Image (cartoon, rainbow, N blue to C red; front, side, top):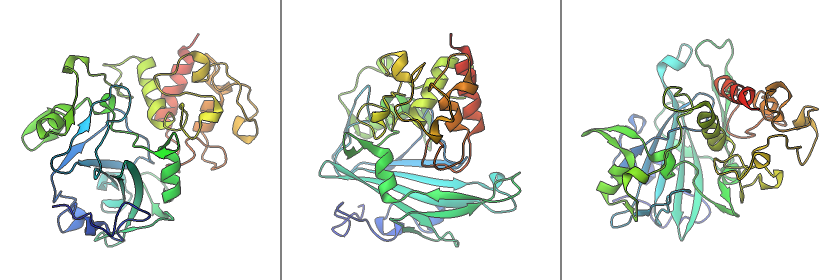
Length: 328
């Protein structure tokens, strides 16, 4: 049984070591689940400095989540969402694979707590670091390492905030509606949750919405891919009830109109973040669009997203530039 005892209490701070939760077998760095957890992935994930990610859901015995077509699944108390951030050998310069951090989202008494754990150099344990930290990482082809930034607990809260409370970002029906590889074979993730008894009140499968895969040109249109990319990377903040709501932007796929999406919309606050430009998105002109200017920056006072990355995601920028060029 998962050890999430009274010391966690989902109050202020979690356990000091990742191993104390009993989520993974020893040796810990093999990341083999010790509990009944479900591996999952997203159709379009958040960019985090080209890090690879491995995600798990733990739902306690006898509990299940509720289907929600437009928002994150309604998870029961004692749910744990686990996300490991790592770089495999082929992505690092003269280095073995390296696990950087593990983030936990734990729900108790209808509230979520976000806990960042940073792995030690020996790769034997990850320790709770409520003030975050930096880890030097040198990717293959880079002449110098960069500082990978692990967020503080407060920064985790700021990205996950919705209507004043912490809420998960990724595990929506639209993002989970995809296949994944399991020991028994390939299976749709939502169907697997149903088989595990972890999802109820769901619609027929042919009604399940699906988020576009940002880099799959064959299956999705340019518009769909760009909007999906903006939603996961920017829409968790720039949405009604999100921490960036005062900007007036809604970068989710549910934006009610072009103005909410930023098309020919003047920024609420000017300054360095505008780059001297007038509008968030100028159709046909990415070079005059504040959105692209901020995506192309690695200055902490200018760049967007402002947390969760040190590097510029050039492939993502190219997608958004192509989309803006396609707008009338």
